[in-house]
Amino acid sequence: LAIVTVTASAQSAFSRPDARIQLAILLDTSGSMDGLIAQAKTQLWKIVNEFAATKKNGVAPQLEVALYEYGNNGLSRNSAWIRQVLPLTNDLDGVSEKLFALKTNGGTECCGTVIRRALDDLAWTKGSEDLKAIVIAGNEPFTQGAVSYEESCKAAISKGIVVNTIFCGGNDEGIKTIWKHGADLADGAYASI
Image 1 (cartoon, helix red, strand yellow):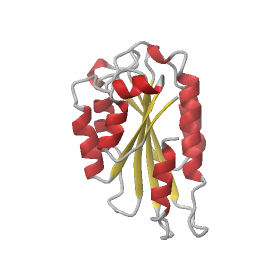
Image 2: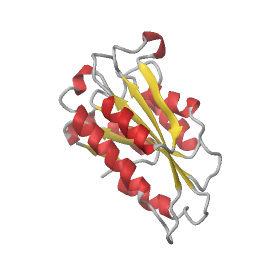
Image 3: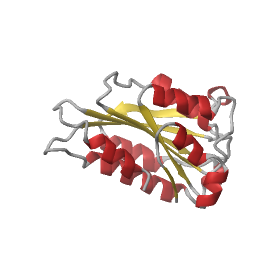
């Protein structure tokens, strides 16, 4: 899956006792995700668990996870239908509770905008040895919204933040709707479910 590449590259950095993994989960909660949301939540939680189990030479880095939802009509138009559910936190029980409580409701999905919001809002470490990653999941074209996905993905990798994408639908459709290209721009991995 998408996270395998990130986990393998991350393990080389975890020789310090204060090493950190920072992970931002961005989940499409628009109405088009109705039949897919449960599977997407389960897959995202598996990724969190993979990171939580990561060790090198017996050393486990500190894991911090942030959660955003986007594309939900129940959110404010002024916020581009994006909400930070949780900032970076090491309370994984809280992340699980909030993730599995998210509901779908219509919407416009702005991938470039939510990536940019996560870049700007979160307290990312400055250390180049820490692993910083975004995992974005959804099922509409990656190109929607006023903020360019290309600019957002390039801005992420320039800050040392990898962007992994999960398209909730057929693999070929995800490639055609640019989800793979978004991951490629930010040294991430693409997967479909």
